[in-house]
Picture: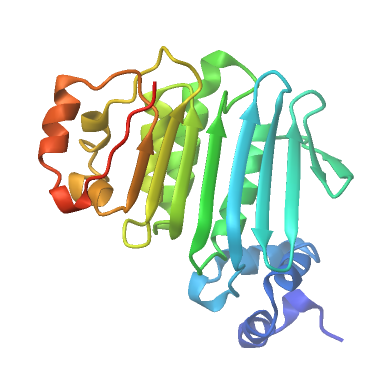
Length: 248
């Protein structure tokens, strides 16, 4: 009897086509060859993971990264601990022998996003410190996230993107991820009252322009004060698109 990895490609493609997301993830763990076949398969031939929410939270104090994937059928929490360099899925702990928690979390996120075709309700990022290993390595973790998502060669379809971060650089690293065609609400927060979120800087990036921001019915940014540049930006927004409020 032939093993899975020895089956013709067309047969394996049909197996995957008739399977749901969880079944394919199980098949990925059958053997290395079959996992490589699935990972190399065109996204169009993979089932939709159908998640409603994806959440990534990092915590320097706790030295961990938590990812949460929620659909109508499942709620999957994966915890990556820097203390013992491990991954915890439903209480099953595995050691990340030749990797660190940032790389492991990104690889797992990439594997999930490869299957995500439907539009998310919420894409949530809280970056208190995305790389718990060492502050000096922090920018590298952001570069890795950006490069990983670029390799997917498509935007993430989400209605709401929520970013809570300690720097505008981190916030701007997330902005290019969302598909502007599906984005309805954008919420940006800083972890402290010292950091300022500059509106005009956000819309200067090559991935984000004023139309991408202003078409959203809701754009919420917690900022310390409104600068002259911000006011100049707001003048360019059509009155019909602009609703604002101030909170002290």
